[in-house]
Amino acid sequence: MFDKERFIEDCMQALSGGQRAVRDVVKRAVSQPSGIINTLGEPVHAGITPLYRSSDLTILNFAWAPCMNLMPHNHNMFAVIGIYTGREDNIIWRKTPDRIEATSAQSLGVGDVATLGQDAIHSVLNPLTKMTCAIHVYGGDFFAPDEPRSEWDSETLIQSPWDGAKVQQLFEDAEARFQQHP
Image (cartoon, rainbow, N blue to C red):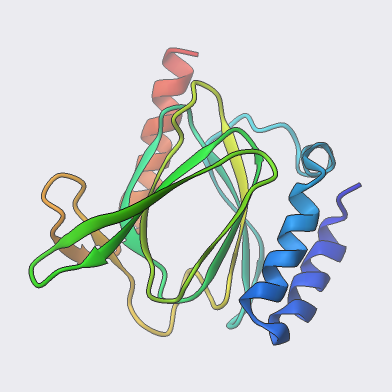
């Protein structure tokens, strides 16, 4: 059974061991996805739910609406992503002199865990016609990083400052499309 408070405590303790130690904690948690769903609830709305936030650690529950896409972006801190229902496809990008280019892709299914380094740029797609949910653990304050975050336009791949309100609107729009055409 997934114990949210114990999971948070385990992540806090693992933080001193770095990203690999945090990955091990997340891997254990998503190896029993039904326990997470029983504790956090069956996903019914797209969005980001904070489970824990401090200056050196943020734990979020992401619920991606069906067929939802999030533009390329960075975190400026390490990230560990563990899928407990659905699928999350990530494209990994690198900077070029005037924009970004794709370098690799990774498809994550239930029980899979991915790690992103501090300098990683990625975009996310839920390719399924059902909700996808994941636990994301960050090595810093996701909402107030030490360095400003960036996003890249999905069409032009041009960099601009991260716009949290825009991202929130993307989740709301994806949710509305899902509700209209379940």
